[in-house]
Image 1: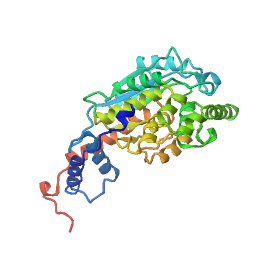
Image 2: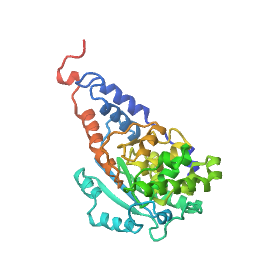
Image 3: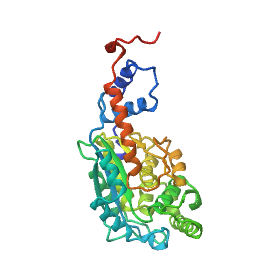
Image 4: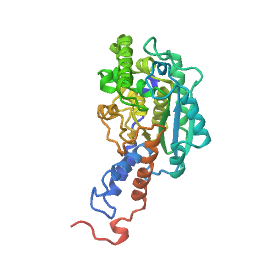
Length: 331
């Protein structure tokens, strides 16, 4: 994984330049489509084609189980992870409806659900082999033919893992990064914060070593590692990525901490209602496409952003130029 991170492909500047040239000729005032124009450039640069398309979006939801869930950091019991995976398979979750509405390919990737990670207040959540295997498993989501990859997750206690990971990567305490997650408040939220601070103290030597992949293994989860692997594979495969909420962004931030340009092919789809997500988005220098007060996970916010990308590609490819439409240009 480190070797791949050291040799990441860059954007296709030829395709991006062609988009910029065409944008100047379309029947509109310069810049009048705002972020849709920037998104068309971004899609072209990372798909490697001057006429970007969003015809085969994929939503990949990774599910993992966490040992730290036994510490009472969630409003729901650990078994809900497996139960929700069944709900995904049966078509009963929110993400099933959103995937159908946007005509996206929905894939559910189960990690080793029967064997939770370790309680990371007592030991590293994963050893290096388990973390690397999860990353490799996640890479399978970035298949040829997918033109936008939406990344989501399911895992009771994974906002605790995300908060601990963000604190380890960017500094701060549990209070800086923890939020309600599944709905914890009052004493339950205080317990969640204390658990995160306990983990940060337990792994202080790993934090001091500043190795993002080691920190992912120390306080992450298998679904977070899989998301990081999917982001990495998408970069190699020239597939633009939409990150969902707090957990997905935290997983991707591991790569950003390794290389500040590792997420150039990604966009944060929405700003979650989780308070730590706002801070994280700022830390990685992103600007979300949407703000809908959501905190569900499952790739739901990423799915909502797909029509925006479709609109950006449609306007860029379908609009007439001043010359072809016989419209007078700017004087």
